[in-house]
Length: 121
Image 1 (tube, one colour):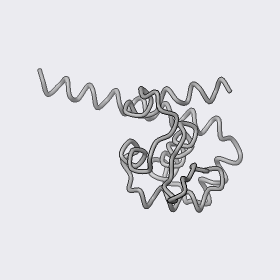
Image 2 (cartoon, rainbow, N blue to C red; image 1 turned 90 degrees about the vertical axis):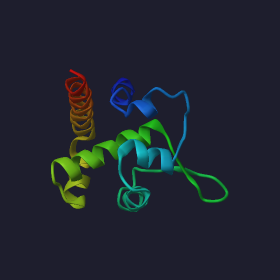
Image 3 (tube, rainbow, N blue to C red; image 1 turned 135 degrees about the vertical axis):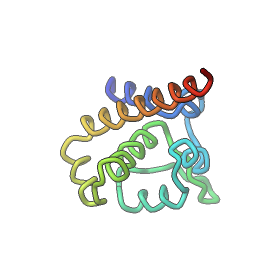
C-alpha cells in the first residue's frame, strides 16, 4: 500500500493535487496527454485496468488506474515495448516498472519547468 501511495506523487499535477476520487476519461486522457480512444483500447488489452462505469457507460478512473496507465504509457511510448512486452514486464515486476515510470514522469516535469524558466531569463 505504501508503494501505491508513493506512485500517486508522480501523477500529473492536475490529477495529483485534486481531492477527487474518480476522474472522467477526458480528464485522464488530458492528464496523460493521450487520446481517450487509447485509454479504451488499453482497457481491453490490460485486464488490470478497471474503470468504474455509470449507468450510461461513462468511464471514471481512480488514481490507482491512472498510475497503471502511466506505467503502460512509459513502457510502450518511452521504452518502445510492444503491448505483449508491456504485459510481460508488468506481470513480472509491476512495482519496479511503476516506480521507474514515476521517476521518468517527475524528471520530465522538472525539465519542462526548467525550460519555462530558461525562456523567462
